Amino acid sequence: MSDISLAPDIRPAPIPVGEILPWAIFGGLLLLLAIYFVGAEEGATSLISGMYVHEFVHDGRHLLGFPCH
Image (cartoon, rainbow, N blue to C red):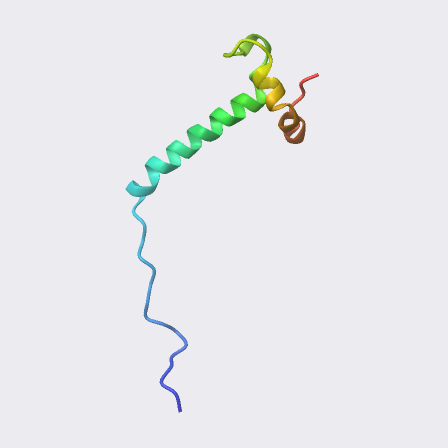
């Protein structure tokens, strides 16, 4: 009949943690920076003077549930 087996012998190659870790740290830092700008860049904790960043991310603040006014 057929010589096809249901369980293939091919296994995926493992990805070393050493290759993923720098990218995971970089992505985590970018995520923390984005959360800061959306959630805390306003008032006394502001790094950038003015309300430019606040107005730019204003709708995102409401979408994520951050109070702002």
